[in-house]
Length: 244
Image (cartoon, rainbow, N blue to C red; front, side):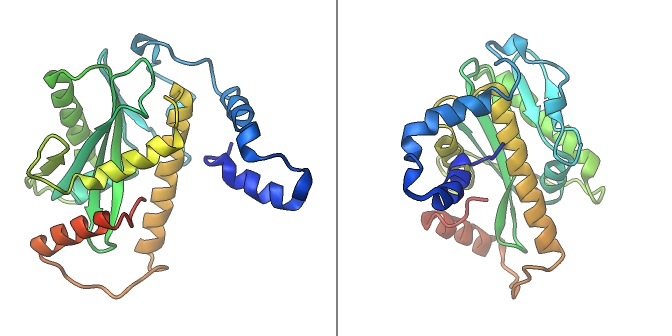
C-alpha cells in the first residue's frame, strides 16, 4: 500500500501513455481498494481494540502507548526519545478534519531539533471529547512514556506552545503538519488507514533523523540563541518550507 497512491499512478501512467485514464476518474476506486486491505472500520470509540498488530511500527516497536474511554495515544520509542531529549519547546495543535468520524479531534505534538533546523512529530492522539481532564491525561501519559527514553536524569521545564495560546505564533509548527494530514485525507479517514499513514510518516521521520545524525546530510552548523531559534521557526513557517 502506497502512502501516496498518486505517486505510483504518475509513474505507471507515464509508461502506459495515452491509454491510461485520468487519475481523477479512478481515484475513488483506488482508495476503496486500499481500504479493503484493512480490517473492518471502527465505528465508535469503545470499539477501538486494546491490542492490534497495527499498533506496531515498521521496526516492530510498540506504537500505541495508552488508551482509556476518552483517549488513545500513539508514540513510538523514537518519538518518545525526541520528546524527552528535545523538550525545551514542544508545539501542540489539534485538527478536526483528519480525525475519524467517531472522534472529536486528532491532537499532535512536535519538537524542534535545532542542530538540524527541523521539526519532528513526537506524538499523535485521538480524542473523544474536549474535556480538560482528557488533555491533562494526554500530557501526563506522554511525559511518563517519554521519561523512559531520557538521555540524562536532569528534569527541566517543558514549554508547551498550543493553538489556544494566542500569544505564541510558533504553533505553526504543528498547524503545517495538520494541513499536510488534511490534504492526505480529503474525507475523514478510516481508523486503520489513519494508523497506517501515521506509521509511514513516523518511519520517514525516523530515517530522516538517522541520516542526518550519521552526517549524510551534514551542513554547516551555527549556534543559535533561544530568541534566534524562535525567529527562525516563525520565518520558516511563514515561507511554508518545512513539512517533515
